[in-house]
Image (tube, rainbow, N blue to C red; front, side):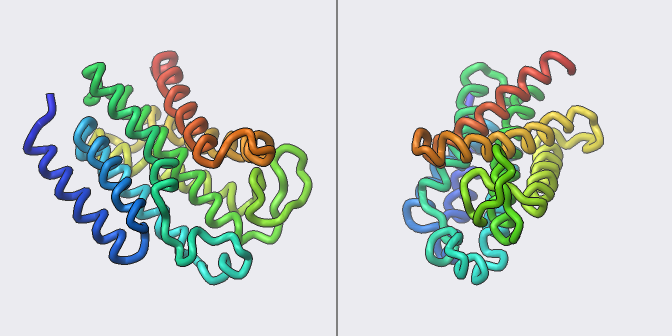
Length: 244
């Protein structure tokens, strides 16, 4: 059952943040509207902790997008014209976490540890991929993950030392924030290794898909993100059932 008081708080928080994101040029109109809808689903069907986890990722994404933006613009690898994101970006990173919330709610498991792990894992993949992409394009040494051939920064499937380190750090950060926001328990619990590992694995898989299916036009960026985030969430459930 949905807690109406909790839902009202979620809707108010999502509305304020969407308006501010649009006002400060972080999201365009379609992005702000999509952000409100995704946040309402996750906070309403999951919990405030789930929404806080998503918001932490969102702010991380905004930060790395704006980081050295002029340098990215000179390389023509920037997001939007001023770093703003559209509904495509919101859906690419929000549909899978929203699906986890819907499925968990339908099964009456939104308060369970396994549902929280699946949700955190999906966000960890998004955080790792976004951070690796936004910081990795600033590297001069980028190599295609499938062949090791040096490629231009921003090439689908390209990886770098900076991007890989950023991927690991972002996955750990997203998992830690999610763990504290959702479970309010010991952050050194070994189980936290599951979402951290899924974040890194999903990011690497995103690069493999980018170098193959995305470059050949068989999948879009949205499809790639949804596939890898979905896989990260599903694998986390498998690992949890097998080892926890």
